Length: 162
Ligand code: FE
Ligand code: FE
Image (cartoon, rainbow, N blue to C red; front, side, top):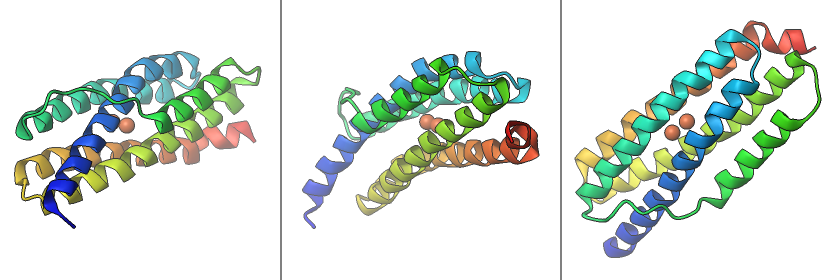
């Protein structure tokens, strides 16, 4: 594959994930508000703060590639956020809603894990060690969040829903 083509794809994917992260800074406060379990509420609030950091890290990567940090609407995230909104608006018990919010949030994290994994690999292929390092820091936080949500689900929220 031509390296200049990979570089273009890399920048395109950066713009996509910047849009995804920006959408999440709006969605996560709503999910925190809709959650009943205090630990789940805190998990969403904590991840909102991390997400703001993910945007800052993306801006650093844009600087490395000498491009302006312009977001390009991530349609996949629009869909995932919309599914989250439907759960928030739906009339269901607090327990079931918490379980459904975890499911929606984990879909988001998995999407981000796929994206940052790809971006880190491409940064490495393009010889951008610093960019790779920055992207892997975010990848780690997305993975940790996914695990935390699994723990919350397994530690009782899903049991309460059942
Ligand atoms: Fe993120
Ligand atoms: Fe995330």
